[in-house]
Structure formats: structure tokens, C-alpha cells
Length: 102
Image 1 (cartoon, rainbow, N blue to C red):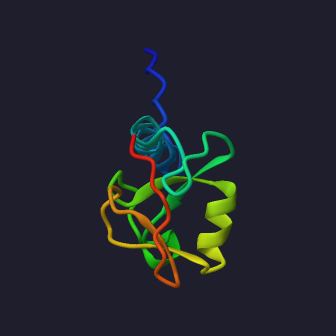
Image 2 (cartoon, rainbow, N blue to C red):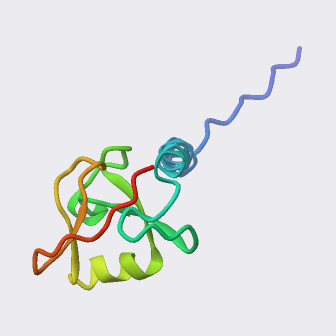
């Protein structure tokens, strides 16, 4: 009598990655360009509430920004106002940045 081989459950890391790929694909389809300056190249996904601060990976908390704007956000020269991805990005001095709507 032979027993079927047990199937392995995907690792926690693999399940996490699959869940987040769907969110990242939706954000990329929604934004299409940098939410700050409108560039269409060198794009990065940015968590409005940082993951290090336990920000969720959801479409409402992730926006697409170019590498230049992403670096400015993390250098605190640029900040994101609001938790809604439809809110504009604003310089720390308060001067609005043109936002290209998708």
C-alpha cells in the first residue's frame, strides 16, 4: 500500500509576496506615472505610511513615484499629504507639486 506524497504548503514569504504582487500591479495600473512630477520612467512604489511604521501594503497606502521624487520623500524634502492615494504630494515648505492624474 502506498501513500500519496504530502503537498507542501507555500512558505510564509511566498504567500506574502503573492499577495503584495497583486496590490503593486493594481497601483501600477492606477497611477501609470509618477504621482508627483508625471514622469513615466524610473518608477518606484512608495508606502505613504512607511512599512517600518507598520503601514499596510494596500492600494490606498501605496503610490507610484519616480526615483527622484522617491529619494526626496525619504530625504524629507517632499511629503505625502493624506492617506488617500488621490491626494497630492506636497513639498515640506507647503508648495504644491503638480500632480498628473491617471
